[in-house]
Image 1 (cartoon, rainbow, N blue to C red):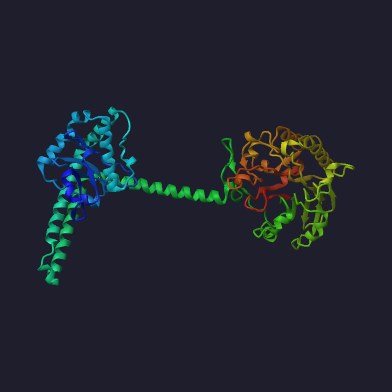
Image 2 (cartoon, rainbow, N blue to C red):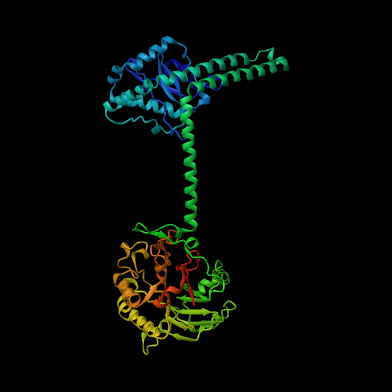
Length: 560
């Protein structure tokens, strides 16, 4: 391969302390840069890197020379690291006549204009191959297109030639540094050439090593002097480094926020069309302090468990831990999906202290619906259903009512309007009205606390995607109007919305598409209380961190 130097342009690259002939591993075909009998010089501008990733102190211009068979040289500038910059030199870099010839060739725009489109493209491809072979960089990052009209290709060559000329002053300083460093390194290399005498004794080797250290020190000194000349560049580098540091801090903060949003997605506002003052519900920061010790109150929790047996089988769920953590007095359940024959067996598994439990099971459809109330406070009385004789409402086990000293507590699971809204008419014309009348009847003697899965996101703030669910069960205009007319307009108060008027807090997330991980949910579970005791509500809260169902528990602390 070395014998073909007369027929090829050879790229020479100085590495470390010696000049390596790159012809041993890269031979540039002559035809790629020849145009008839003339040679065209291509000036390629310094590769641009992101300043934050590579400072100007480490990205300096290197010049390479391509020699043809006639001895003419083509100069190509490329990016190099600061350390190796002092080691770069062309084989004929000291030739003034050759340098002048290169300048004349580069400035000869007429030769460029005389090139055909194919010749221009071939020249640019040669530049790609040259840089890609040396630096293993994607050719696209050089900014040299090989497609387009002739005038565009000519403009590209002129542009990079102009870039090199405009940076002459800066390159002069760099060239001076490189020349001085190279001279020093060359002297060191000459003194380091082993001789027969050097190989005969350890003393000469020590002298040689000492000389090498001294010469390296001089080279470092020269580098420092050169850097002093470019103090402005150092100042800019410091500013860039400071900017990079700040960016890193911001990135770390973003990572922490991202980590927090993954572990506690409910803390991130998730809504398709949020209003200006809306906030995401965070129980860690939005719950009031505990009541003073000795304050008489009752703590009620409610949860649609979506199958009690399945919940109890989960290894990740512990009823005991939940009771110890929340210390509730009463627990209301919906969608238990158990049958009458299973009640006694379930009772045996109840936590000690919660000795009073009341279960309503579906008899029209086994393993469906179902509600319950589990309490450590013994109630005065218990009712199942609405009490209306011959009513179909009481066949699905959707209502359990217990009476305490100062209020009635109703655990209910409101029928879903179903796929295709098949039960929408039944829901708004029969069920809602029957439940409303039942509540009004109870209120004649005591205030009422209505809780459970009411299967309605009442307002747009109560659902992630209101526009996309206009005809979805639980958010139809009919259901929302019925919710208002039969419950809120009849004197019941939505305790969570009263306490948190502009807060987005969901209680249900569908299993599809990982809705819970992104907090794309619905608020379907409520505590509605009679207006007469609304002021006694100390806290109405959501526990979105408790898993085990597609719903999460919610709670109410009511002062007595």
